[in-house]
Image (tube, rainbow, N blue to C red; front, side, top):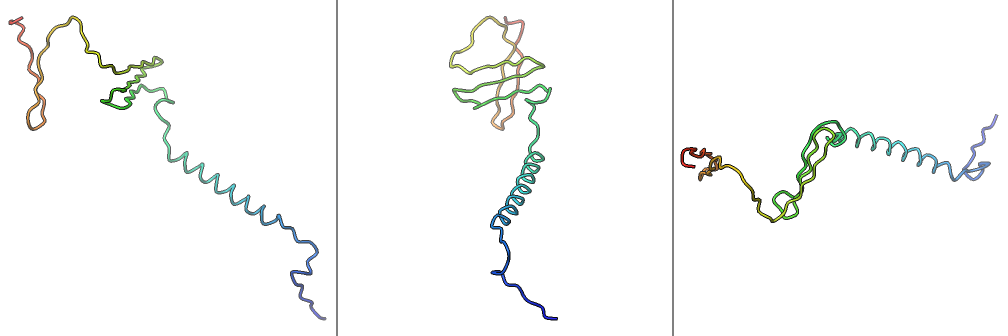
Length: 112
């Protein structure tokens, strides 16, 4: 009994798209693994949860914004260059020491 060795040229049909199907399978597995990694890395932000939060954008800048969510109510504040005015009561004064500490001195109620 003789055995005949078949060469590549003698194959009945060679499907050129067979290797592309394997490549698509590899890309699918890679994309699913990437999505799982991203979802496990990211945490759900407080905005999507039922928690209170405060967001300050560009703090100290001229276009600073403050967004406060308390319960179902959302408040939006924008910084302006206007100085606040109105009626009120002096509560005291705060002093910053050279070492960075802040000391509050209540106002003397008898001098008013």
